[in-house]
Image 1 (cartoon, one colour):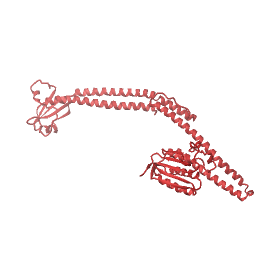
Image 2 (cartoon, helix red, strand yellow):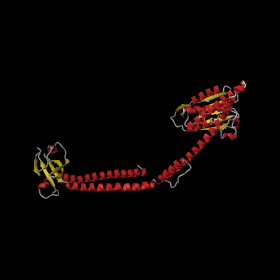
Image 3 (spheres, one colour):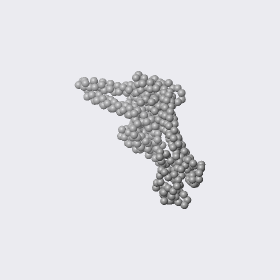
Image 4 (tube, helix red, strand yellow):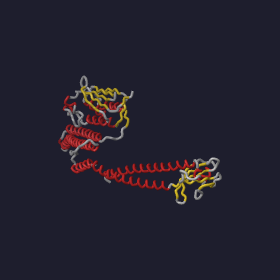
Length: 432
């Protein structure tokens, strides 16, 4: 079922419900008014039923029946008037007056039963076939009005939906062309200020984001291929040389094995970094409350083992953050590993967590001004860093994790030399 047809049906259904509710309400209000008028006149007549026996009266169309306290008809029009238990209770004084509808000889009667002073009851009847006729005509008119209203609503809904959905049809055509050509550079026209016009703008924004994502993916694949080519080439070269191991001295073979092991470690780290970045781009799983100070303490202990020649000084405050513990551990470790890698033997790395911010300061050579804006880019390695092990993904992963948690990471020159990296996570709370 098309959207246009659904909108038409919805419009017709809504109008049908509204018209039906209004018609039913109108019918019962009119029915109540008509019967209220009859009941009022019957009640007035019942106040002095003797008028019917004195000759002409304003209630000449009514029929009066007097009932004795014993429940028998005492006077009036006796034929066909039913004397049931209710009438007898009123005549005996054990029930209040009431109205009722009865049918006598194909005549629809409206009656009021009222007790008399001194005992007995009076039943005043009126033929109300004319009321039934009026209500029947009213039902017919309301049915025609309802049918006409629904038909008009369906027609109007079809016309309005056709005009309203024109931009949607253009968006659909554009989406189909993009799916066919796989070219997200196409844009749809944006006219007006309606919601559908904003939908067109949002669609163009989505296409722009998709285009950027595809371009980013292409660059990522190209950079990853380039970075993997270097260790693979080195491994292949060493393997080719090892094929002639009979001609190599033992020391040369040992150096080749060491190079192979180092290249294998670099490839492992590079692949792990690529997997982490890929997971960052598609992250969105369940998050929990993470005790960030415990994560930092664990990472510092690990760094002390990894860099025994560097002193890690730690100052942490109890801090909680809502996020992924595994990814936060990876980000904290990358910051500490970066500081340890740039620290000379005997140097100190200062780690502080407080106020919702993690600060890692080393006493290394610092960050050159031309490198400061790029150190968080993927595969970027400063000139001085190319002689050190690494893939250029560590700090890029830190930024990905920070942004995934609504935070940020910045690099600064530390007072007195060295680098200071600040990691702030949105929503982190320091417990007092």
